[in-house]
Image (cartoon, rainbow, N blue to C red):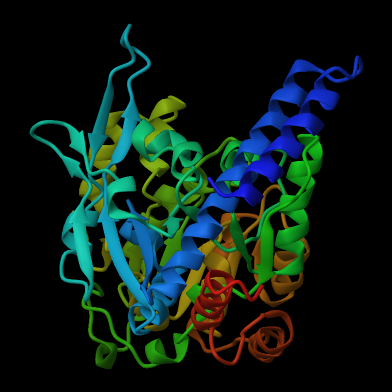
Length: 447
């Protein structure tokens, strides 16, 4: 250990001792302070390692821990920018999702693949399957000597103990880009941005100033200092969207030349917030599709929706099976399970939805959105964009807007185009390239 490191550690221990003998400090607070001291010490050790790598002209090692292909859009251009830069050595680690069985006495952990192994296997970089299903072992991240690590989601409970952020942050700098657009204000917001994960992040890349302030407030509520290196970079999901402008998707039942009106439906994955309209309209759409054979309808369920509906005992497995079969029996309706969804978005005519990060991405298509309103959970960004939504409070209004849009009556079109220009943070070089440049500057000690 260097003399500088010893001096810093000594001063921190002295400060911590004075901190814990303070009679008004709780055990939780001084344990948190100790955690902070250790975290900063790990960062100093990593910084010294970086200096040695720079002297030896070694590449920057970046790991992407990938579980869900559906969320890859949030990191896609970050990966591409780093992978195309000779300063970086990029590796993708694919892992399954952990399912905890609380009904069993010993809470056995089981792991279910979401298709990451197949989705990423042909990517132009080193790709490693992180989990061996036969002997139930995990690839050691430490042995790969990572400098920076990106997790797709902040949910530590979905990963094994070996990949826990607290452990990983001891030998690598953890970076985070939110997997979803920031649209919602909710009392349950902390469950989407768990403090346990946030406090071990080294670099946070924020979509907007509002998102950064939201994370700051989470630290404030937990009586912790916000000491993350954070940057307003925009959202990588919005990069290169012009490539999809004229895209087509084979999932549609009818070709575009057949001029069927294309509808995408994306209801909320949970009913606990009183925003989901799945159970209100699920049968209405069957009636509508039967009535109007000139439509082409896609239902795109969230990966968690049926799981959540089952857990909340709002539907049974037999009812789900029957519901899915209803789609199979219709010539103009489809359930979309594809990992990629932008081709469907850009080749559609309208989105019917409720509160969801998906509306922010769809809005960029410039196409109309019918918003099924129940409870208001908009933040300031999504509230501003909602000026370009068609609000439907009941089925009659949903059907009315569908008929108007089928007739090419879209009075909010210009408003949406104006909001895209005024409200989105779209860096000229792209958010992915911007984030890559920050990583390089951080590694070189320029920040």
